Amino acid sequence: MFFMATLLILRFNLGMQATLGLYVLAALVGFTRIYVGAHYPRDVVGGATLGIIWGTLTLLVNPA
Image 1: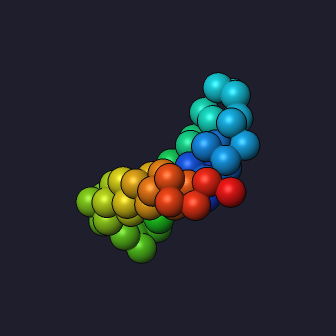
Image 2: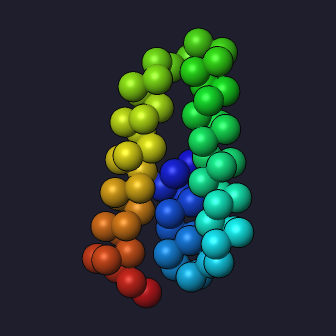
C-alpha cells in the first residue's frame, strides 16, 4: 500500500489532502494486519519503509 501511495503521490504531484488520505489509508491497512494477528508491528513498519523507498526509487529511475 505504501509503495502505491508513494507512486501516486509523486507521479501525479497530488496535494496535501490526497497525500494525507493515501498514507492514512495505507496505515489503516497496516494497522488491521497487526490487529488480526497477520503481522507483527515491525513487519508493517518495515514494509511501509521499504514501500516508500522503492516507490521513490522507482520514479527516480523511470520518471516517465
